[in-house]
Image (cartoon, rainbow, N blue to C red; front, side, top):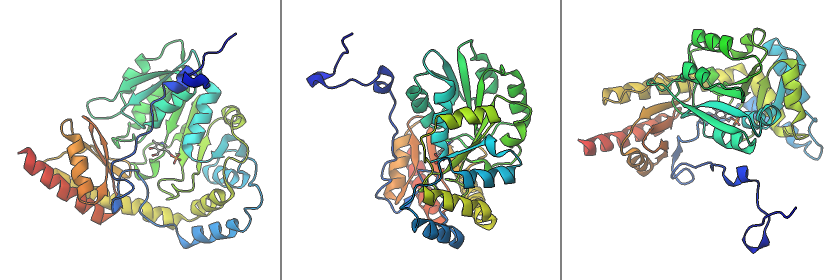
Length: 360
Ligand SMILES: Cc1ncc(COP(=O)(O)O)c(C=O)c1O
């Protein structure tokens, strides 16, 4: 068989790769004074975390453990699950990619809400599965009923982002349980709880695993644990599913320093509490200040606030950048502002004031 080639005789990628949406970056993210565009923590690593990284750095002439056993064992012990139910890796996004590559693929469909985390359509594309986006409801929350209606005989997986990025909304426990009751047991449900620690705490995906063996919970050290730059996350599922996800992992996927830091962060409850408290107080303040200005924002269970804005979205983003802070704008939909730095929030409010004045 003759393979087709690109201009100049170069190899062509798989069609699914050529069609992949690209990750976008926020305007000004690399040049502004404050970055409120990537949902990072504004709190620096604790002394215990820095010490653990320092100790690990002395050992980087050696490979880390094959599958991050130390961290996975710590996580399993605290969550009350077996070690073989936990998979760790270089960020929860890489674990999501592993799960999609293990359970979906050409000829299958993956359902997800939209707008949600921009990585989802990319990862589904990489897995060569068909994307089935389902619009959020009028409250910018997952429309679980519509997601159920989207299930076909080809559905291999459904992603539920709770709390949702970028709207910050959460589904109710009753809504989620009703949904899980009705998803066929041969369809994988990937519950992305990246922001769980900042939320109402009504839902704990891990508690639901016994009742729903097709459920997979994804969590991260990037947000409430404040380690976005290191890349560490974990997945919890039945032993069988976790084993299959583990089988798709690259060896040594969690680096030595990331594992040491994640273990230290996992043990350092006061550090997580500090990050969560910082976020909650900034979030409360920013939402109240926006409301005073007539901008109603959805209740957020995340480390960001969503400002719904169907017109001039990019103009507000530009004004924020001019005030020295990058935010995340989705044209015609809204602007997402990561919270945790009061000076950055003041700058956003100045930009909002200017924006509203010009709108009038
Ligand atoms: C919903 C959601 N899931 C996963 C991630 C990525 O997490 P990680 O840094 O662990 O790959 C993000 C990052 O912004 C996110 O918003």
